Image (cartoon, rainbow, N blue to C red; front, top):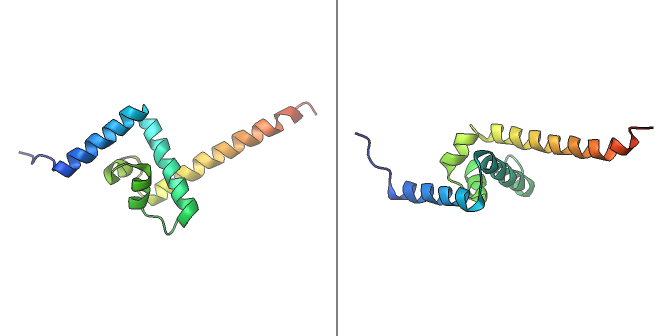
Length: 102
């Protein structure tokens, strides 16, 4: 028989659930919020000085939630870089669109 979760886990779990519910976050929205928090943490402290614990705190999620979506810091750095590259290319495309006729 599995032991019941600790009070701390229940509190953290319900906090995460209520955060997702209150903000209307989907699974993708939660991942996006984590990537936002990671980007801010990296901007402030650099990639090497940022920890998964600090990113989880900044994203207001439990570490287990962070690790369910990203296997480690390398995966999170990759997700941040991919998203920012997509944003850059979208902005570049929009900027260059008026010149397509030239």
